[in-house]
Length: 119
Image 1: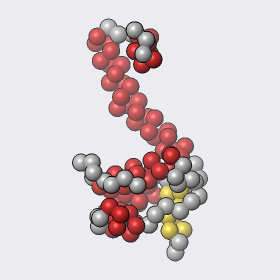
Image 2: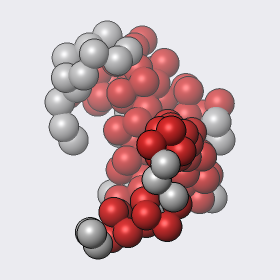
Image 3: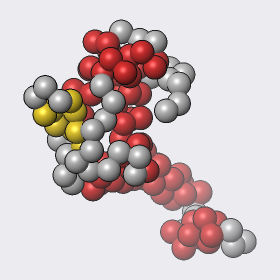
Image 4: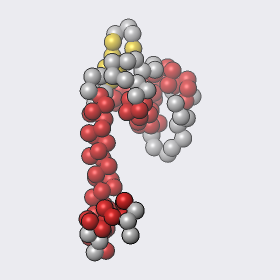
């Protein structure tokens, strides 16, 4: 785990860290994730803040609780994360890129050439 250092809300960073661990395979589906107290201790934050990040993922169907045991990665969580992040990537990067390229008269083919490193 990496220390939390960005300016975004800490609970969002906790949720993203867990998602990143799921995507990387560090937390496969149906395996247990660290507890909110473990996240809180590691990042030196309030356990309620860590819980807010974990609960965000529960609300999204990424994690689920086994009563008395802890939080686990839900079946299909990796695919849900990938789908959400791909759509976010499209909205945050691809659409603005295409809009700017259009203003500059750059075609989609020319953009693809630029990405590949062609001149």
